[in-house]
Image 1 (cartoon, rainbow, N blue to C red):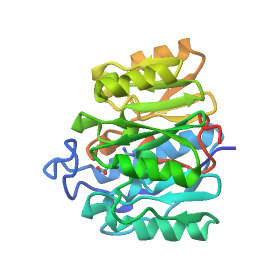
Image 2: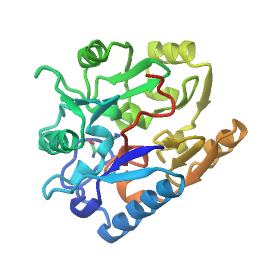
Image 3: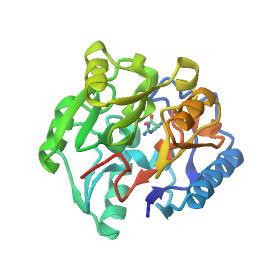
Length: 270
Ligand code: ARG
């Protein structure tokens, strides 16, 4: 059964700007954010997932984006090291939750930046590691060394798609959703060579965070506004679901960012 970590948006808001989506003049509607978050949680529960909750902390508005807490591998977690000081306070909160909940917490050397499942996604036994904007390429190699897997670092070239999970979503060990424009020529070649079944997202839907999907079995949950992706998912045998997440898009996040799969994703074969 899928186990997912989420953090209620009690202290969520647009309090700083660390990606092009964020504008402190365009504040999130707090009541609406709370409602959208609850709807996402309820939908995931209705698909059979167990939701675990991280207690929100005042002054850490982006703690809701639990995908960035770390990268899970079995009962180990490689803790994130955030690039921006505004998010570095989350590391201690995440570490405490993981160790209280039975995970072995592992840290990268201090010189690395690494933003967890936001930038590190397994497709099969290979780890696809986004780098340049948040995580660095050397950190991805170090993660691969720690868990003993092959890493394919992928450079992210568009600041709107600053985390790998904003432009790439493994569905199964052989299938993924992606937005090619967010990668350089080499990255596009790597993805095409490695993943046999690719579903391509168009720009307007990428901007609605179509790639930021949560996969639970053959169910796939996204923000609203991704009809073409949903049509392609259905044709490929998946069951797409949409739920409104406008208030989180204002921070540069959507469904996937708000979740961390604690038992390993469908697409991971470790
Ligand atoms: N405001 C957050 C940031 O810029 C959003 C993080 C979204 N998380 C994700 N996994 N893409 O860091």
